[in-house]
Length: 112
Length: 119
Image (cartoon, rainbow over all chains, first blue to last red; front, side, top):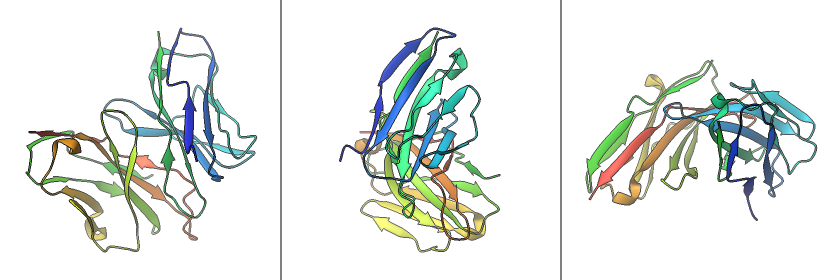
């Protein structure tokens, strides 16, 4: 199992550009989520999904879109990047009956 | 709304010292899960422990131990005889669950405690 994979590892964007952070898991987990990590603030939930076709907002959803067309993939889209979105982004997945979250290695995003 | 507070922003100890990382949480739910994660300098998040709200039994795993007290809404983490390799950021997290125990994978994290162990 590759576990949870995220691409890219690093990305630099200019303000106003768009991009998609990719997240995939091969464990057949029902739940997937996106977090951002900022210094001194821990990780904060952006969006989450309880299954294919079902997504919902977390604590800090503004400026981000998600969709979940398959169980395996949960991409995070930035439609118009802003400097405030400079952060480290983590994707996570878990089994419906387990609650142990498996985290990806993270994507470090810088918006200039 | 749920909240997790790690009052210690940074802790610095010398190798072989014992160190306790504090975690206090707030939730209105009766069913919830508590977690500790370690984030070493390499940046990945390493799962350490999960505890559900109905299990107040303390746990020991090698040099690590956890003290869960519902009466004070605390879930503290102690490292005995600390080592340089324990240097990392440690996060406490909370996941609320429905009556059936399903949490939907939504975690609320504390701010993290930076632990530095000096040789």
